Length: 182
Image (tube, rainbow, N blue to C red; front, top):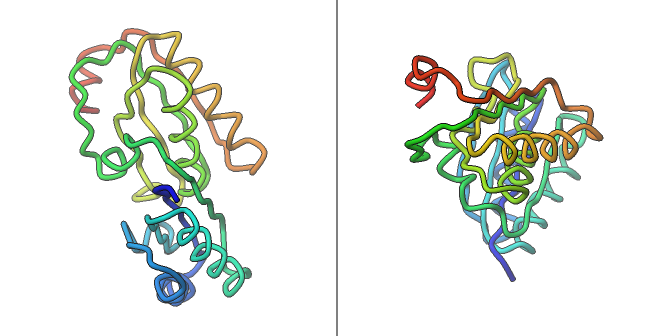
């Protein structure tokens, strides 16, 4: 058994809250976040043992399929994901800046996990659909080649789901921009 993270994203608040209740009743999982995000969607992020998280997410997918936007289960997620979700990552130097944007919240966490596991990069922030009409983005940093590789792999991980929106890499971003991001 290993630590896992899972998420279900719903079209409505009512389906989301009902699903969150069913998810925690299904298996021994902890809720990391359960909240309304733009534009009135509801996300539930869970952690626990892989089998428990998988069972909980499957319950949500089965019981609320008509309201489900997207979901995932990641076994052994990159540890950097957790502080990045809360905007609490500690990054001092930004050599280059990678940005990837998705149409939903679930896809960006999957993209962040892929990026962190692909190259020597640091996750700065994962913004989950707050104030963005449901879109989400990831900011990361590292050497230019590492950031390019991480963004390319993250993009490939979400493209088949139809959730990729845009990405870019900025070599040597200006300090005035960095001071706003950090």
